[in-house]
Length: 376
Image (spheres, one colour):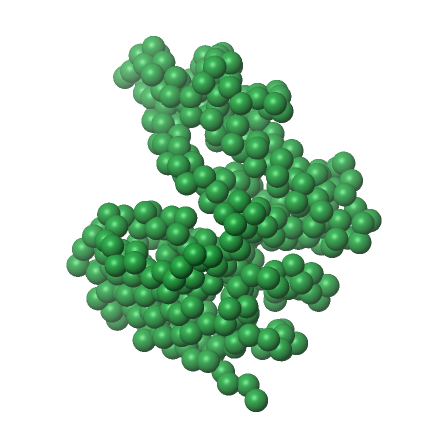
């Protein structure tokens, strides 16, 4: 998959950007706060997913602009395609999104058309950061392969929020305990399904990440992964999410109901699960050095790209937002060597950090404008 051209105006600080990209490497250079990450973000929202920076819709439009416009042309393994994404300050909720000239009723309908993998400095904390970040990483990885999964996760999140509100209302005497039943049944159904898909993906991830980690440590260390479930003691070989798994999940919710009422939130469920990483059998979060945890994070993100490529039969576009500057030379070279068969976008503040890269195109981003640097 290759992004061929990108035209952007009014997206945050970007002004009249019109760029053609190399099919392999594209380096976006410039000082901080000039618009490099905004360019990456404008590509990312064309995947149909929410901003990786948590940007709210109203903040997409630049302060001096009334609207933003994005036109992106890309090629997949079958054909050339075009995405047009427009939004006005006058009506933020009414987003005008077109795929190949056909209007879509929501940006999310773009999902699975343009496939990208984003890697930010925050991702370097993936293995030792919060479980929530690892759950989000798992769910994004799964939904890139199975489009319908995104709706399941979103529905589960809505229901768990409603159940938690109900728990508080029961404690206040506003609602009755038997009202939990309808929410518990839905959570058990969705949660069992999510558990099956997360576990299946974790098995693939563990195999691919272990191979990559063996490479980066020259075979001196072994990486393994485990999906820790707050509901199921065992997930291997289980896929009956509408039968035994559903009943087990439902029973766990009912067993915990009194304690949930006391605490005011739901203790057990896929919203509390975790992806645990181990180096030589020890949890990297507790025992790994900073360098080891960064290596784990690197191979997890690379494995995500590899698995996605295998599943869809086409390599995703890699977006590396200021990641290389956070890595030592060994890890920089490792990353570059593992993504050389994909189209890659790299943002950086210092050209000398990537000056050894003699292929591809370089662009300068300054005050929201961008142009190609012609190297002689």
